[in-house]
Length: 278
Image (cartoon, rainbow, N blue to C red; front, top):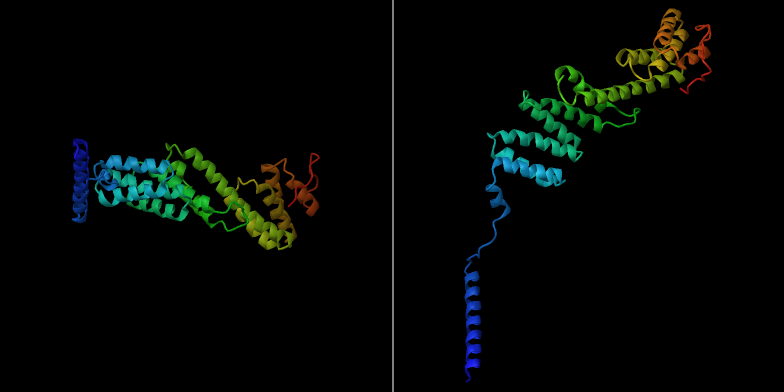
């Protein structure tokens, strides 16, 4: 046998021997070295680094991973300051997922557990948003969640005068109150069209008392005056008209009063305006 063939034969034998040895090792359950698992890698991170990892997940939209990360910090590092941060981050993840109920509960839990936390203004701001965003935008529908948002935000400017969220909360509070006022106006208008004057008085007086700055205030005063007039309460009707003239001197709502209760208003300078549709 030539030397070349002998070398080839030896190589084949060695290959078969190594393969057999490898098979025996695997059969015996001896694991070959593998890269470190994600769990092992996480154990090598500090709590701060784990928290930052969760923030990166949340920023990139990996909300399930973010929740897992923040829950892990909260559950296994309870005495670490980052556990508190993780609690707030959990609420934020639910908020970003538009899970308003879960977010609201998480923010409420945070407020209950950490009432003096430095970010409590942010928590109140977000808590109100969970209710506001859950509420239907159409005023005629049930506005229980809009009312909840108003309750949450009322007094925010006094309690958190230096908060960066004051201006936005005030804007949101105005929008929420106007929506509630519109709801009352729609109900009052329903009664107005049917001549249910006592019900009109109740709704419009409630609207004007609770939401005096509402965009519907002028029309509410006009309907209130007409309702009082039809209830044979001329003095109360006159007071409503005087308030309408004082607070809304250029409103087309004055035309409504002149048309529906001509004896109540003698002369109104309409300025060429036409009556707004009810």
